[in-house]
Every structure is written in structure tokens, then in C-alpha cells.
Image (cartoon, rainbow, N blue to C red; front, side, top):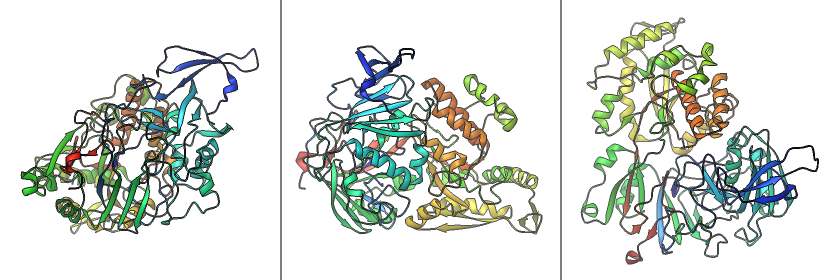
Length: 630
């Protein structure tokens, strides 16, 4: 658990001065915004329809109207006070989460909101993708979304009392693009300029009007104080406590071991409707543990308060004892219908033999998921079969409608199976006998130029196929050992390399691995982040999330189509097309997913029980008054 808000995929967010506006009309529009008719000084140019609102939705209407009192998933009467104790594994050596260097402490942020920094807008947790004003009081944009303007809250302040102004926004954007983590340059790649006509107005202009999501994801910028950073080295991983603007500030740091945040009681935004009933704890503390096994024992010993369990074995066997029987600890399954993304054995296609599609496909036949699920996971998981599992965004059956129209344009560049076969991961009968799959794997490997010789799978030069599978969790060894055994049965030499968290992160950032266990989280509204996952431009960009090393022109174009989707229906069709092409290129060996959060917590908290949200978070929890101090 690396953040109090367990956002498995953070979703996102032009300029135009108010002198362009000639009239404001109260009209209905797709985002429940007010509409303005804008003209230029030239009389022969057409009027531009401009919207002004407290929020903006990617597709369709905003759920919350102007003047709403609070989000439905928050209790505005929740009491403030108490402490939330959380756990992380590994360690940290940096309080700057915006750069590639170092391992940042939990509770900070890379993209979107965290404890320490506020952003221009905040995303509601019960809509597919809508943003509401935070530091921004008003959002203004044209019908084609070729720019967006934010009018800032006049009373917005950093923790040191300095006002948040448009220069801070521009400074933040320029700094993150030039010196920040490479994902920012990819994510905001279509922004052409940032203008600050006055202290409370900032406008972002875009390359064109096709990237509809930019008007939303720009709002996710965590705003940095220019006066603090302008004379400091930004690209440095250190433990100097920075100045923030969010609901919490850093109280204390024990390097690599713990970090404590304290609630900012005079936070300028504490009474805003988007924050009512949230950020209720006076303190939030993260303690670091060597691994998950030690952390679980710490939880049961009342060393911290809440854990989201990812292991089916631990869920089934580890959480027992008197504290569960007498109700002091709660073990709760919270079901959801959110995209679960893709968890998989991830190939590094920059390296042989994973640059060969037939090799990648062949190895998938040697992973016996059915036996693994039955024997190791108590039959609780569902096999992953899409990069957008558990959602309408995942492909299935054969392509049809708009999806088929899109794929037909690339027919000569795609495997024929894309159009003639339903994608299915290899299956077994769960008995542990995979001879049929082994025969198919060997057939594909021979087609790729590999042959069995003396019990070893060798290439034309007699070199045996060998590679390393990198993992970060000791509990995963029991999953890989049977897979390793099956690989050896066809003559492949495989080593399992267990590394610590810092080394794992560093090797992923530098693409220093053969195969790893990895995840690609997704949201209900995919968009610009898909570039960082799959686009050719990111394949050699260290620190990007294109860990696979994909360089595929068809996928590049499909990503742009997803980003440019004009409607929800079109977004679904285009995402399914992208998903289908990714699957048929066999870039990973899909593992499994689980459509629920396994939550264990000490019974001293409460939260809105009937709240329906897209992501699990404890931001809206509070300490029960009758347990305070116990």
C-alpha cells in the first residue's frame, strides 16, 4: 500500500484571454457549463462557442452541478482528528516525487493529487472522468477544446502563506516538462504554449483540437511554488522538506523508515465542496517494512491500521486470530466494476529472444494458469484476457462495427488472426499435465529457429535459450517455480531473480531485465497515458512505462485514435481495437485479475458504507469518536 488513496491509475486534464468574450449566455451543453459566444476583432471570422463552468467532463454531463455541497462518497459531517497509520515496503530516499532520480516517500504524488500538493482541479471518484475546480475556480474552454483557461481562486495559498498565482502554474508546467520525470513530457506533449495574462488567469494552448482529454488532464498539475524552487536544484533526490499547498504538510521524516504528515488546519481549501468530509485525520503516518510478510504481522500486532491485500493465499490464511473473532479487526471484500488492467509476465522486447513474436507466443503455452489458480490461489482469480479486464473497454469475440472499420485500415500490417479468431490465452485442464501445450510451444519455437538438442533448446549457433525472471515479492516465487519447471522441460534455462524494491524500480526504469512480473493499470477513461505505455517514442525513453519496448506504427496510430475519441461509444470501440492489437502481438503472458479490494483494518474507523467509487481510498474515512485515544 503506497498511498492513502489507492488510485490504481491516476486520470488526468489553452489559452484564451477574457477580452475575447463578448457575451455570456445561459445554455445547455454536454458538460452542464455556461456558454459564451466569443468573437475576434476581425468581423469576417466566425464566432467561437466558449464554455465556462465549475467543472468539465470528458464525455457527457457532469454529475455535480454548480453549487453542490460535497461529493456523494464523502460525509460532510465526518469528525476531524486521530491518526491513520499506513505501511509501505522497501524504503525511500527522496521527497521529490516529480523526477526520475530516487525513490520518493509514500503520500507524495507523481501525477494527480497527493497529500502535499494541491492541483488546478480534482477528479471526482464516482464518475468515469470529470474534473472540478480546486486551485482553479472556473474552467473556460472552446467547443473544439483547442485551449483551456483556468481562473484561479484569489485566496489560494501555499503552506508558507504565499499566494498561488498564474506564474506558479506556468513555472510548474515548464519545470516538469524540462526537468521532471519523462512521463510529463509524454503526457502533456500536445501543449504548445502557456500564457499568463494576469495573476489569476492561465491559458494552455494545444497543438490541435483532436486531443479532447488535454483540457482535463492539464488540471491535474500539482502546483509547485515558484518562489521556493526557482533558486534550487529541482532534479535532485534529497530529503529536504519542500513547501506544499495541499491538505497535509510533512511533520517529520525518519529516512527510509517512516514519514509523518499533519493536517493543515488552516488549509485554504478545507471548506471547498470538493474537500468536504475528506482528509479527516490529524496525522497520517507511513511506516516502512522489509516485505509484505513482515508488514502483515505488523498489522495484526496493531503497528498500523489498514491494508489492501493482493495475495489470495494471505487473504485466505493470514488473517485469523482473536482480534478478528471479537470484531476488533475487520476483513472486508469490497467489490467493484473498475478496469483491473493487465498483470502479466512482461517481456523486454529490446532483447532476444523476446523480439520474436513466435517465441513470445510459445512461452505463453508453458504457463499453467489453471493448475496455479486451483492449487495456489484457492480458485479465486479470473484469468486476464485483456489489457482492460473487467470493463466494457476490453476486446472480445471478433471485431465489428467501428472497431472493425478501424482495424480494416491496417489489415495488411496485422496478423490475420485479428480478424478471424477470438483471442484466447492458452488453457490446460488444471491437472499439471501440459503435454499438449508443450507440443504447441515446441512447434512455434521451431518456426522461430529454435530446436531441441540433447535436452536443450538451442538456436542455429547451438546457444541455449536462457533468461531471467525478475520479481520483487518473495511470495511470487511459488508461482514462478512451476512455470520455471515447465520451461526447463522444453530445454529453456531460467533463473528467478528476487530483488529489493529500490533495485526493482531502478532496473525497470533503465529497462534492465529479461522478463518481469508487472502491471499496467487502467482507468475507465483511457487517453494520453496510453502513449507512455505503448508508443514507439517512449520505447527508448528511460523511466517511461513502455517497459515492453513496443515500437509498432499501428499501435502508435491506434493510441492517437483513442486520445481523439469524440464520444464514449467511439472511445470504447477504439480502445477495443488497441487492446486487440496488443493481445495478438503477445507482448506479455497474461496472469489474472480480481474484481474486488481485499481490505483489512482495525475497527476504529468509519466511512460512507453505501458510497460507490471507482477507486478504493481512505481519504473519506474518519476515526470513530468512541474509539478516539484507544
